[in-house]
Image (cartoon, rainbow, N blue to C red; front, side):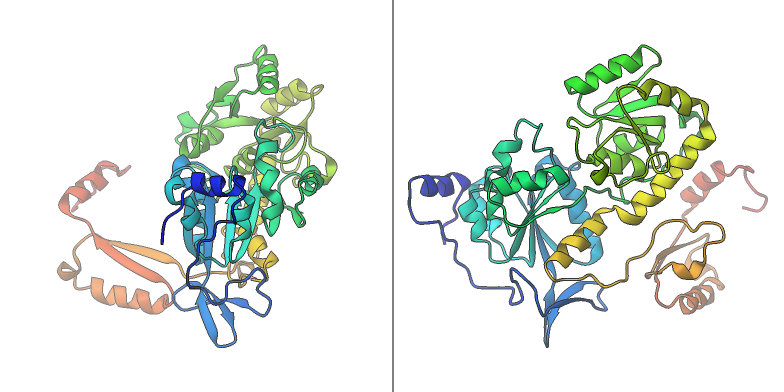
Length: 426
């Protein structure tokens, strides 16, 4: 079978030839546009399976975007990681790196295919996808220069998800039938609090991470006349560190609607966030409880107030951190997409938030933990190690337990870092 590149697909379409067909034997028997009569089941291997009657097959999700081209940053990479940790089999197609055989890779089977942006993918090719295929559009369609160009093919998807309520009708103008509002999200595996030494905390009074579009440049210039504003174009771990080092994180969207990705990322890191106001129907977070909304008239006063009120600022940051981890992770969004297609994820998700004082521990749903036991001596050199390990396994039968022992060089390094110095007899 001949491989087809994207240029050949486009040439066939625009020359009026019959639609390009990539034929292959059906691999997934339960793949469908709608999974009515199916359900998801987690089995002993920890994987999710699509089940209908006596037939079962591993859940497969196809992620299509520019994840490998943009690695390690980009929503696609966090979505892939989330799906794998959920127990799904994940395949990916990069429309930048896989151009030479794009059509063939694009049509690989999955129970759900998620396309990010979808720039340049011919609608005729999208319509050929054998399973449910959705578009998750993460940019502002009204302001970004590429917005109108990107969404011309949105009519070909089974469902379109947009983070802007105001964009729902805009997508429908291009022929999209099923358009749904779905906010962006954060990844708890990346966007998190860091344990920093005292000299690294509160390093920046006010910071902004992102591209300096004209409206942002004007605002930061205004604020910079009164106090230093740290500005950086940073991604992944560097961005997380800046958020953890800032007293106030500033967010300003390039458009007036929708909650940008940076809002979820900053809150996920436990930062106090000052963000531009959005329409009331798009607000996911409560003003002065989870974050603080500003406008052109009050931003200087808000910055000044919250720099002087540390306890109030930290309380809002903590509330925002708990809210975003509880309701707005990529796992929540993946569960929503699967459920929209008739596949409800079993209720076995671990709640990763720390327990508040007085909160009943029974309210936390626990999944098997991974535990690592470190022994000072080798297992064979310590007659107590083996029975201790057996007892530990008996006490935690559902946990995955590994062990290791320290060599002499590692013991020396450990003792060098011991706050009490070298202890007698060690």
